[in-house]
Image 1 (cartoon, rainbow, N blue to C red):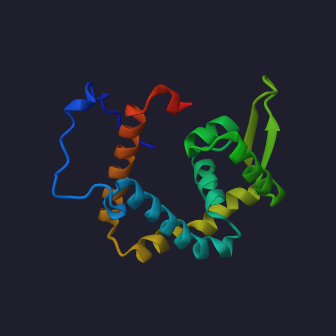
Image 2: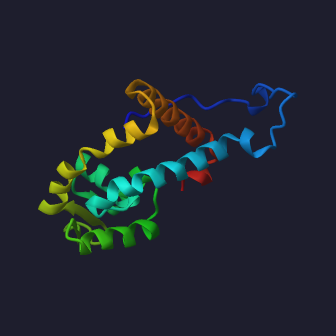
Image 3: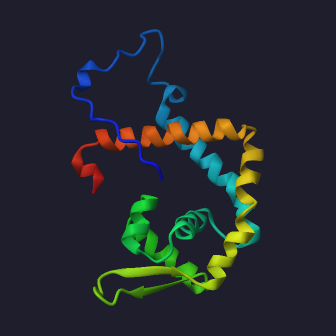
Length: 170
């Protein structure tokens, strides 16, 4: 993932004023709601695409990370997915029970759990190859539009993380 780091804004009071002719407290004028409702719609769209593979959307996301780089710690996987171990551990247990991955304690530090794909988990990658194209087609957007949107959302996420109080990073 290419991280776009922007310098932290020095003074929030210098942010541009919102136009007064818009009711910024209407639901449809909220960026957060547009992102939230789009995320729900996206997750709903993935469901029938992933069902033939026997995957849920969170499992698919975990696979995307592990297909990029196998043998990660639970912490590394959680950091990449923005999930805490309390959410990730049950997900990984279900994936392990399906035979797609294995979890084992690190030899050098038993507190760390390493997540590795099994041959079945690696083979699932080939079956999932059509999913991104199916999603792109269903979105009605061109590849360029989707690429631009993805980059803009990644930049927004990074800006929000950079501007968040340190407690929010925990």
